[in-house]
Image (cartoon, rainbow, N blue to C red; front, side):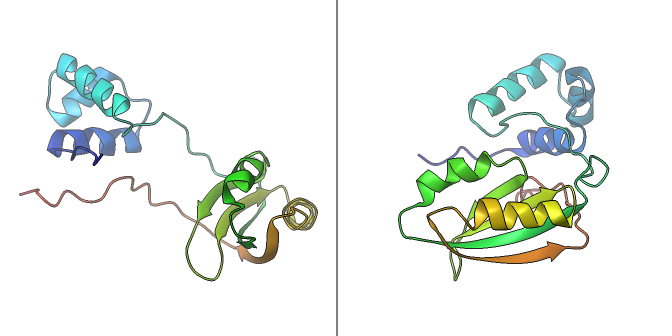
Length: 157
């Protein structure tokens, strides 16, 4: 079943919450130029539809103790993805997991206390998993998130 397209107001709500997820419903309604009751209704509909899946805080990884980061690509044995996904997500240092097409099957974002801890995660936890055939590690020297969560509205005037 195809997702219902987001209209201008839905997009504005998601965009504003992406900027400040702690914003009150009253402030959100004012920013997107709708009534508070209409805003509550829209928020509930967006959550029920799975467009908004939760509210979170973005933190600076270095300031919370993750001084070393790397993207790790993994090549897997065929058909092992479903079993491996839960294992990878249970590793505290694994911050993001993506199943991809191409020469590798999975890309991870791994954040660790320091390079020694990063080495431990890669060599002792990731490379020892039975379904992992090969890994490659790409150290992250600087990373920035755009905060973009939805594509631009193509119907905007």
